[in-house]
Amino acid sequence: MSTVAFGLLWLLVFTIPFENIVLVSGTGTMSRIAGLVALGVGAAVTAIRGRIRPPGPFLLFATLFVFWSGATIFWSVDPEESVKRIKTYAQLVAMAWLVWEFADTEELQAHLAQAFVLACWGVAAATFMSYMRGTLTIDNRYTAEGLNGNDVALTLVLGIPMAWYLAVLRGSWFVRWLNRAYVPIALVALLLTASRGGFVAALPALALIPWTFGRLDYRSKLVLSVLIVASVWLVAIMVPSASWERLSTLQSDGTMGYRRIIWNAGFHVALNHPVLGVGAGGFPLSVATELAKPFPAHNAFLSVWVEQGIIGFLIFISVFVAAIVPHWRTPPLLSRFRVVLLVTLIIGMIPQNWDYVKSTWFILALLAAQGSSVEGVRRRSSFPRALGHAGGLARVGTAEPIRSERAT
Image 1 (tube, rainbow, N blue to C red):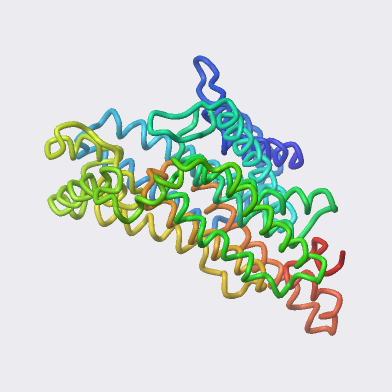
Image 2: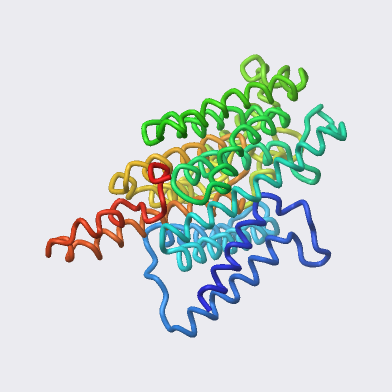
């Protein structure tokens, strides 16, 4: 039964990057359907076996965040939107619990990361199809049909450190090449979207490659060189001048696509409601007076601060801290991967409304589960090491049960 529950969780993760491409009438996105089924089976499995994993700090803070969001409905400026947002947060924390409960080993966590990367391949392919068809958005950008270009860009970027980590760590020849090849493909697709926020987030995402360069053997370093050449070639022949022109406005565009004006209005609201906020989901309506009409925050952290006050903001930040806290006790490769992935996510969320997006909460749950599983292995292996079995457990203790690049 646990295998079935994990399989459904894998399917849920696979649907996340392109959840809005396929909509089911009367039900919503396909990831919503997959999530409901996975949650139902997961809850049944835990009931049958009569136990659950003790929740760590990450889940405790995440649950507290949902409760505080629910409390804001009593003073919300937009109660109807607050109810929707609270339901969304609750569903996202439920998904995070599934990751925590059923992906409690590094191998299972790697399978979930692979599911996300495979789906990112699909998003990249859909973006290339729009390019080949010449289907431009109203601002002369290419994106997967049915998806926002900025969301596509950040999704593709988040797949880069995952793909590279998996390529270094695990899999057959085909799987390693699939993950390696994703990097240049994702970069080209990112540039086709001409997303400035995604472009900035790609810089820390790519940092994992030189940071792990020393782990690679001679053949893998040669492969990396080929990937760099392939990336430059693909960018040169495929990325149109319109994309470069838009990306070049990153500094010269004084309003950053009107975002600074929205952010200033949001700051004014936050200063007027510093402690309790204006209610979950209330940002657009709260700035409507100053901006003449409602606007989303285009900044996940500012949105939480305005809507839930400093209390909700601190709880939200605590969720991120709890997800990454054990990183200094994890093996070097895993630690670097977790830091890069979290930094990439945080930078990507600055111009995006990603505080209530599945990708955000999946990544946070994955990071928390990784830190917890390594700590659990260390605690379980401490007694045998004291009896002189350190050699037999050293590979588990370094969180490398999956074949590494050096062994190939």
